[in-house]
Image 1 (cartoon, rainbow, N blue to C red):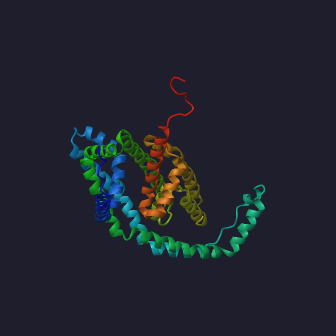
Image 2 (image 1 turned 45 degrees about the vertical axis):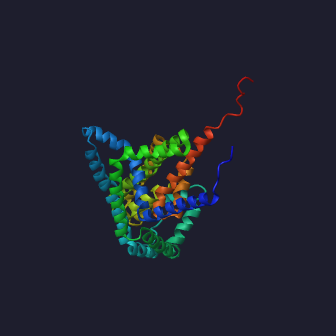
Image 3 (image 1 turned 90 degrees about the horizontal axis):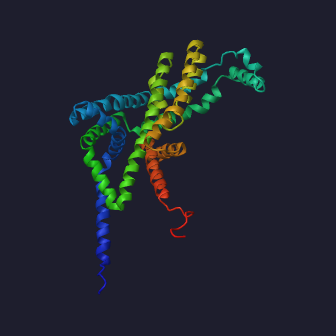
Length: 358
């Protein structure tokens, strides 16, 4: 029996042609990749809501898709676009406000500070020191960073108009995915089975669970914290409440939380001698700051059991790797990789188990 004829040149050319075709396809779809990624994450995370809504609307898909699309515009796109637009529009005001910190003066220290054991005398000395000099030195250090942060954010979003177009494109693609979700899911499952058989199909299902877990645990928790924190800032009369709400959302997604922004607001209220609002916002800060420890684990475990360190690394690394979109894409990629690796390890045979017939 003669061995099969292997034409090396033909194989190499076929691989190069397929690789070039794939690269060209990605190059053409590059303007839509961000919107496609956002849409995929949104649709996968909210698909159970859409199916439940369809059952309530007499099993009419078009009605459920319409309601979900309008909900995306009202709940996701409109507030987030407004927040980014507010930050971009007030970038210069934020920088000037940071530079104006040099004019702030500390009020007289409360008497109880000196009575604090171990650190009371030292804290009183520092209070008097900064009370005499003000925040000129601190403002001199912070001022350049305030301008750099706002300019970086403006550069990342690339202009409010472009972001609005991306969000609108995201909603349109999400509506298409809602309408044809079952067909797309079957195609992806067949693709996974074609690549790796039954394991490939399982991998696709695990990836969907990881995406849903990250979307529910990270984004929804961040949105709840930002909305509640922004409501407290607005009621307390803190300036730039909309901007600070957007910042709290970004920090909450980055697993830092909304507490740093709320603490800065508390300091501002103290300087304004608004003791009543200071106490009220302090209590509200404790409530909002503890929400992520309660809500996030419950939501993440509804999708997939993922460690918090992996989510934190995905958000920070994704931010540096992909910019603003990386806040959402980074943890999803790491969550999918972790879930697939964990599933592969769990499928390994237990070497400690005695062999059959031993």
